[in-house]
Length: 358
Image 1 (cartoon, rainbow, N blue to C red):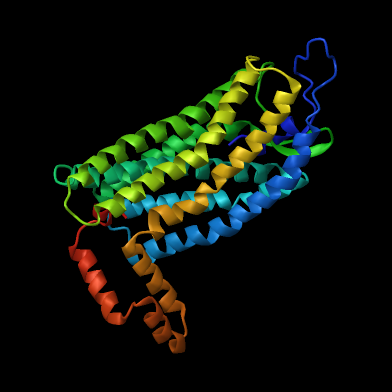
Image 2 (cartoon, rainbow, N blue to C red):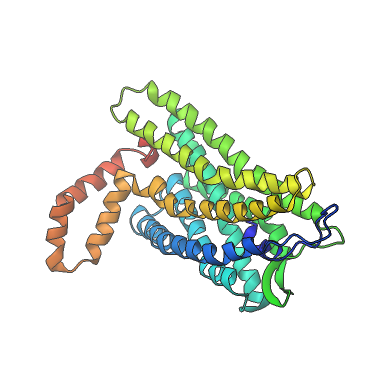
């Protein structure tokens, strides 16, 4: 993530920019005003909608699923990453409109949670795609590979990858003061910090978009080929879900990565001009914020749309109701005690959840 920890650089005039004959600095005041008004609102909305959804996913998985297969391990980790990420948003919302007031230690804690949640979420989206590919395309030959043990090992590896990808920002992020405003900001070392910034922009493009997108397209394309050969009447529902997953990822992540790529070109002075700088600064804020919405949609597209998961979610709500409301709820959602038992038995004997994709 870039804009929240590098926001001071787009909220103040850029005195390091080459303006040619115009010796006046590029005033990014309009980008600053836009960020102060737009970002707190969007961060707050993502927090409000993302927090309960991911908490529900974790509660259901821990209480009813008990992490008996690789799929559930990945879903739990994805929900945890998204939860970790959304918990940082109230602090960034306040910071966008005011200044950093929580000190250096908490600045480090927040950026660690932010970066691990961000990159961790991407890593587990990759693992879920691969898991579904193995479960459907290589259901027989690689069935023994999809064990809880391998799920835990691969999860640890991905947490390590997410940590490594987050290290530069974690290390260089600290509190400071810019034009009298206290900030929690990424201060790159050395006399020429451009190389570090370009490296992080390139890393965001490759590791944060290109690699996940290539893996998702390959896995889900092979899954669709396999499902089309299947005579099951549910295959078209599964195909629609696959297309939706890929489209959602593409729609929410592509604009930000285009803006990041253009920012790289601006830093290399391939693109120049003060107005371009202003528009690009606003575009980065908007498109990065759009990517945050994805953590609100992850519980829906990876968990809530699954029939068995909805069953367990209903059971969770049912257990929280008072006795007088339980029968009414059961009738409304058509989940009687007999249906609960039958569904759970069929789940235990009907194979992996990912065998039906959702």
